[in-house]
Image (cartoon, rainbow, N blue to C red; front, side, top):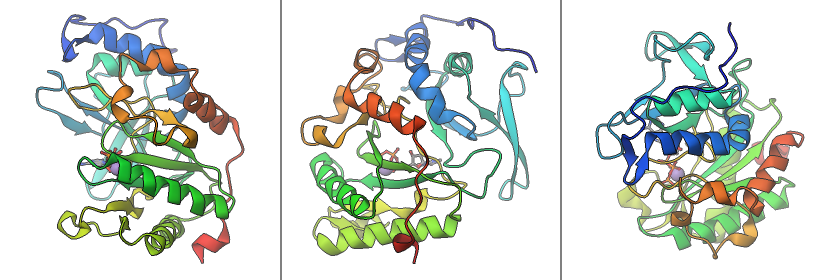
Length: 292
Ligand code: ATP
Ligand code: MN
């Protein structure tokens, strides 16, 4: 394996990936957030959303690393039962890997909640908060309840906007619990929260049955699941990104504030600072109360 270069060339630098954002500007964004973003991609199998002609054009999910990837790009081979063949996932563990992927017009980064050396023991516990269309405020209310429930059992999560409609609550955990136990725990959190506010929160996956309520989706807790990475942009015209926040900001921020253009100037805000600490902190133990 060769070492990453000091810089990667940007081909067709003037091509726009979002309105007003050239590929050169996008790669510069990725380099600006790399120190905070790469630790969350780390050793995780990575799924990418690529948009070769920008957000306005065709987009596709890509799991397998391109065969033309340079030798310094790390990959991990994973047996994919559904695909009936092995997939070589990219491992994005370096700023220049991020830049190289950006140059490939990878515009969303979706790591798995597991690390490559132990795929059957997730190290992230995730509550995916999905508000109804145009209902970010309801999502905020639901997140407050989720944070209460997690605090009651001693968990200290990170919080981020998704860059889309909702929010993610993420707890780095010890690699002990099985996927089944994680799902049980997530379903437990959902049912406690829904029990307190049945008018606000549901575990109903089908949109027509949610009745305008917020979905807390336990299915994100699985080896095959993914979660958009902090600082990953989204395939939206506004170039919003998934951005770390702290609970005190709830009700004061709106997800549209955090974009490829604005976030490099907001890396010392409380959210990024809190997430830096979360990366360095000991993984937490999922309390038995949630698994039983
Ligand atoms: P939003 O706040 O708008 O819900 P989100 O990123 O949470 O944004 P979801 O649809 O709730 O989007 O999905 C949660 C996670 O599941 C995503 O972050 C993504 O990693 C993964 N995901 C969703 N849809 C797909 C898909 N079609 N293929 C692969 N992964 C997906
Ligand atoms: Mn979601």
